[in-house]
Image (cartoon, rainbow, N blue to C red; front, side, top):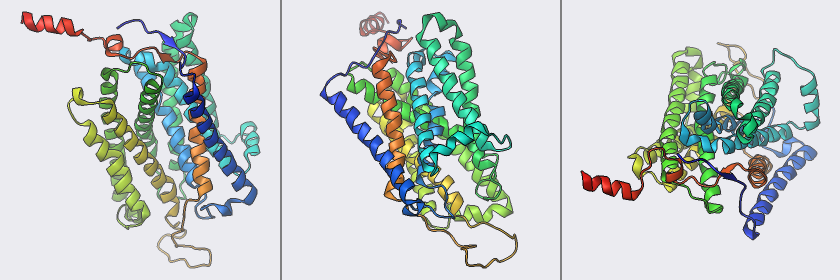
Length: 413
């Protein structure tokens, strides 16, 4: 494997600034959506007293979970010593920070009073998982920044391994904390399960790697940099493991809930009732997000192309958004059991399934968070040396043999 040379993003023309302007416009749409909801109140959205976390939370949780998974590449290179992944550790760290900040921005703007964040940052209730997550989020950004520093400064190179280990442990803690936000909600039958912690970790692995693959392919194509098949094929095979892990924990989650009699109603609501969440679960989450990408990737490694792996990554992201939608919106749509074994009737929709229709401002805010992450990555790559000049097979494949060598070996044999 050759020594890796890094450089800034070379693109510096009309196309680059047009792309930056388009992404900036989407950020503006997100901010305008947040202002519209703040100015008019949340009644202009699909949210209500029953569905208090809407589509912005779906985007926010997806981005936060994916931020942890985006560090897969860096962890595999720095912590587990896989040489092929080491050149991409810098980009992995940058993408992780950008995704987390994009998700937290959506979360903050959806609260209705973003200025109240100061209270959350200065007054802590250590019995609240929400308060603990503030430490996890800020610590994640800080440790990731230090980790990138150790990768980019030769004087700090000796600290890259311990920084990578710290980052690996912290990202697991962050994703566990995010999953336990729902796992500790005992009032909601669809949540209230410790299984959500490992499930969110498995989700992060798949979502983060899928986003990283798409960013890498798009960046190297736009900047006209060599991108060989070796790294793409390795990531494609790694994606199979992460999709299978996510599918495994989803299966375990629902099987354990089916085993408990008190959760049979929840499982019937999600899996068999025929409502929108059932379709989201089976068609998008399982079909598009798991079965379809596995069918694309389960082929001989040499036949995996950039198009195939990129398409599988798109399907994983679509299925991931559907999965978070089912967890968050579907979990709130199940009527609360206030008095087990009793029928409850009142004028406040007790026992009724609430209706939720996603509004345009909610989608605008969520997409704006994605655009914030994208513009951070673009500016970061333009300003600093995050990108390897080449990811050609000859530069990163430790087993690469030139064509001439292969031909000579064949003739000798």
